[in-house]
Length: 287
Image (tube, rainbow, N blue to C red):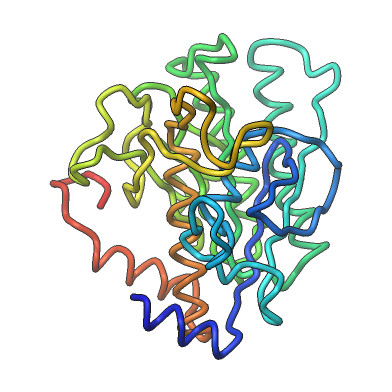
């Protein structure tokens, strides 16, 4: 693995990775271009660190794909902050507004940066957190309708990696417009990621990971770049992050690393390689 990293370093190989999130903060171990609203938030910063914290700089961790750093001529990390929802209403109306915001954010990002090879979206409806019952017919119809809109309009040239959601076992296809587009409407370049336990075979026991995604990745007690703290932890050493958001970042980082090794890979090929080389966790379950 170290020899491969050195080879990529010498070849000045990089990949362009995008992150769509609620906001980002500057960090000594990160280098990224900002697109959209200049909102600050820990969530996007943690995602960025998992994917692309700098390589060989003697600070904290190294990202899964440090070759998404802008110091590599063909690489770069592009952070897109979603705008704030204003007068979004409540209940299902608020969820519809949120879904529309996510979908328009992806389309706007693709128009502004058409060369993006991998896009991470660790965001969704978060039904329970927002006080909405996701099991109702109306809630599921909303997800299906917005997923259909994504399926009809999404460009297929980039790999879109999305979190399954954290609604405690809800079918992942209702987690966001993107999970629905992938799992219900069959959009092939969207990869849905669940949060797994350390054994790599089961969902994290106190994670609220939704189920029915394509891939399971580490999402339990993940340390990364956390703004406002020493590089990765506070004085008690307890800051870590759990959920499908961070599992999706692992897969985005791996996909970008694969593209640094072989820039000719298509989204379909990356998905197939990940699927074929993952551990089969049982019938109907993510790998």
